[in-house]
Image 1 (tube, helix red, strand yellow):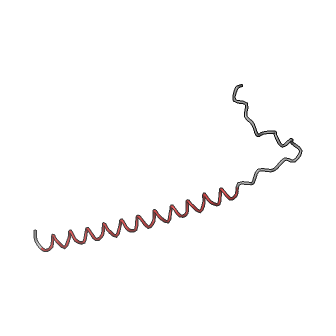
Image 2: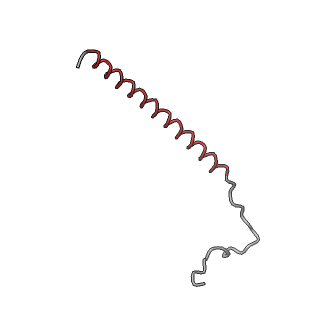
Image 3: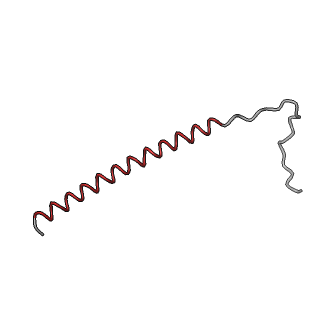
Length: 66
């Protein structure tokens, strides 16, 4: 293998390493954006309203024999 071939392989390996680093950085940024979007959606869910005119025992038990 001549010197030109070795230099070409070294350059190619460096380019691949840089490309992978950029791809990983973009992936991490996309995950951060997805996390922020999911958090915003979860926080946007309104809390369940409490109904004060129902008896306190209503909705606490499930009939499993029916």
